[in-house]
Length: 186
Image (cartoon, rainbow, N blue to C red):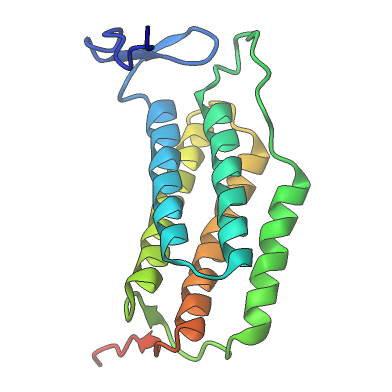
């Protein structure tokens, strides 16, 4: 018999964290890992638009790390869990930085703010960047409310949003799409 996807346990607006603690589905911890899940879906969409094998492999790596972030956020830090929860490593953050630097070596210097657009692949990178920033804000809110959050989660999300911005510029460059400068009214 196939496993049923529905459990009906959340029908009254509550869900369980890893460790068994029940919380409302509106809880900031749920909002945080739900936003990371949304980000992961957008990263999949970004990957669908990419052609370079190296970029595609990097995006798959990022998706794997986002599952790690989601697991960390979904775990009640005050409860002992029998599950082995994966964790982030400093090397995960360093990898993003190296990839940013590699792309920046090819890109012309920025001389203006860039509007998202010009190609669906570029726009999707910027959407993913915005979702990443929202996930980061939720995690900061958790921290400000006194909830434990692994510091590497905040570092990773911060660096990932930088990576996605540069990936948008890099994608425009590879596709030979002109970046759209923001021209403020004065």
